[in-house]
Length: 474
Image 1 (cartoon, helix red, strand yellow):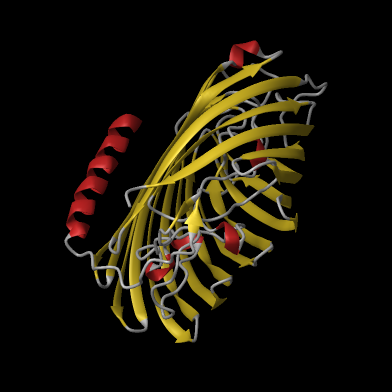
Image 2 (cartoon, one colour; image 1 turned 90 degrees about the horizontal axis):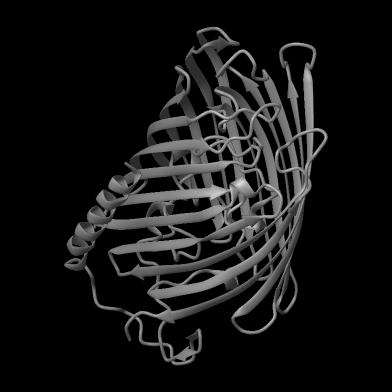
């Protein structure tokens, strides 16, 4: 099913690329003979012409119009980036490499007493970025092997496929189609620990799961229509599918398969300068085994402001109505609540900062069913000196169950995570990264005599990475 979906998206991308070719205009800027990337001189860094359309671009996009807003994550856009201005990605390149690393985890099964584990990983990767004046798409794949020293039954291959395409169908209509598929055991990228980015617009990342095989896919389709100078409308739909196998037996946390289907529509109007405000409606259908379901209707007032290309801030607030059913129901079958959130980010030449807060009804991350989720997170990156970069991240999430998969699950789980990394470019294409993260998770409302179960986890990792990039064509 996931392979079929990926093939359909691939054919859609190919067809839309053909449609967009006829609309391409000749380049307006002469080549910059002083520019270089990956050792190639005399090539103009391609402008992300499409990626700036109504703020739906990826990192490094150059805005085509200062009148267009940054689309918030709630409405299907991108969240703040932590990349430096000098790290912005260029298009029309093929990139590849290999990552070799080792991870020490002192509690991979989230048990007390803990059982530690050391794992070694090797991940080759390749990615293609292509852009024109009317279209941009990227396709990346990374796959490899993770070998565990103690939990050998979890040794297996790891796969990650990432496809993202954006098209300008007309001067005022844009379309984005994206698919992310992954099958992992543990952490695919050792550097991802320590950050909780959550709330509306994506899967719930604020819950820790014991070491197991996890297969997930996220499909996203979104479109915007800039129908007047100071007005635009948009719609988006997404489907998130999460499955677990090789789940450790009790007393480890029991995991459940989860699916989330979402759809949203919005209208934004320019208030002044880079400030856009509007309204939105969002529907989420969260299902989990066995036979649990939460349907959520969210009505929000939205505001997004870009004070410059380096700073953006967005916020939303509004009522939320949920309809709940499940084997273990911990809230009324129909209930009103308040959804709210804010997200901001700033990018500099050597420093970047992002932070956010949200509260809304979300999926239970494979641990719970539907939950009232509150998260707060912050990330800070700084270039200490040439070729040396450090990053700090912290987050806290509170998950209060609306429905749970079975009466044996906890009614509430809180998670606090902190992490730090240090990166060093040894030579031009070779880098090394060191990192540490600590997670603390508490479970409340467990049945029987154990009403609370705490789990601490410390992870240390080192990754050696060789990466290269080559321009496509001339």
